[in-house]
Image 1 (cartoon, protein in one colour):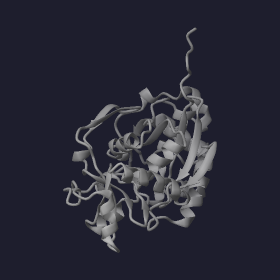
Image 2: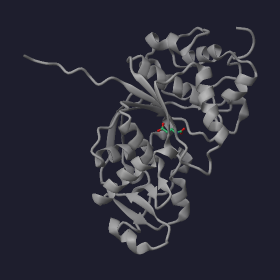
Image 3: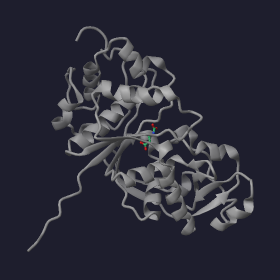
Image 4: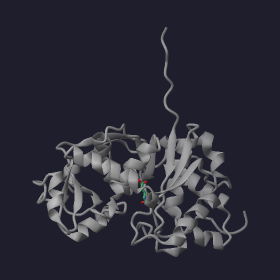
Length: 318
Ligand code: GLU
């Protein structure tokens, strides 16, 4: 008798960093991430990525939850708080050390500090020249009090994935910065390691996030392989640009969800504007995320960034 095993249930996640209020760009990406999971009858996990302690604001932790609820996006599990999950990251790092896949690096502090937050294109530094690559993991003991980072040894060759929105992508991590930081001695894991450990341990099957994180994906796939885990599907949502054609910045209050809330904007209006920007309708509807579950279609999502128009019609009577 032939038995067919059904595919694992879809598990998606929303992973805000509490470093400022969520804005329109986050709303669009989270709506798509949520619909991608819900349209596959999957579960949604919420995770707060608060490892970059210098940039985390306590009020932003709660406001991210308020913003998501206001939008009508719910979750089945979490919030998981990264700063409370240190033991899981330490375990993974120990495994990488035991396999000699990481080495202690004493190069500049600036490099080391940058590693805790998700890198965005402007932060991609120069390629690491490999100055410390001759060390083995045990050499860390001889460093005494010197601060150091653990760098992952990037193997030669490019890494490919089938992006849910961008199609097949292939990037060579050696050309994206080379050996990258996965943790700081005594201070904790980098974004790259934490995100892989959390997504893997939570059984996430689809990682849907902003296109600014494309360069992180080949690195994360290497970590999945190094840790013996199967990578999820990745989907990178084209960014939202302001009316001036520039990237939206968290510091710009006018596009923050908290500002819309205070102005009395109807979140169902906003969802309607976002759904139209995704190509699922040409009409401007007043709708909730759940209204789009059966009409969700990743193929209609435009490849280009969405340039917000000043007349986005969020205000005024519904
Ligand atoms: N927390 C990251 C950010 O807000 C997202 C990381 C991810 O989705 O992998 O930029």
